[in-house]
Amino acid sequence: MSSSRTKPEGASEPYLLCVEDNADDCFLTRRTLARNDFPHAVVCVADGAQALEHVQHAATAPLAILLDSRLPKLDGHEVLLALRSDESTRRIPVLLLVGSFDETRKAWRETADACLLKPLDWQELDAELTRLGVLADGTPVIGNRAIGARV
Image 1 (cartoon, rainbow, N blue to C red):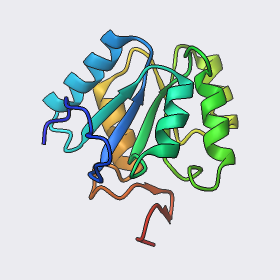
Image 2: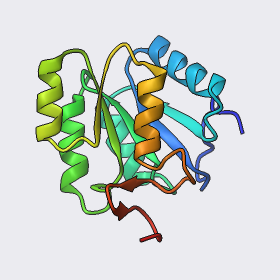
Image 3: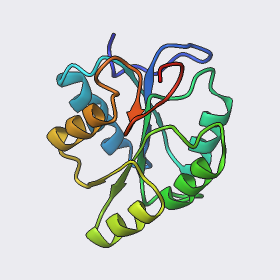
């Protein structure tokens, strides 16, 4: 499966949601993941409002969300807080992409599962996706809490 394609509407296959307003950054993320044999589709949306709408209406929840902190409409911090306040989305792993170390501290207070400094480094992303279980067998795990049917 190629990670550079968009997940078809209503499909139930595993995917990673990338919330990034810069089309070039989204393209580079998809290309980097594809070149490193990321086994799942990558879906990109361009702002925080689209991210929340996508997650609320998708046939399946994403395996994880790569969330830029600086977005139009709703910024990444607002999206993260909204995801965490909703029972149906609070356990989706969120990797917040930040531009400074100050934002890193804020992200941890807001319960991001990981915080990565931009520009994105594949090895760091790979390590975090592995730690969260996204690269293991498609079932994301946060600490000892499993997402989905597995416990």
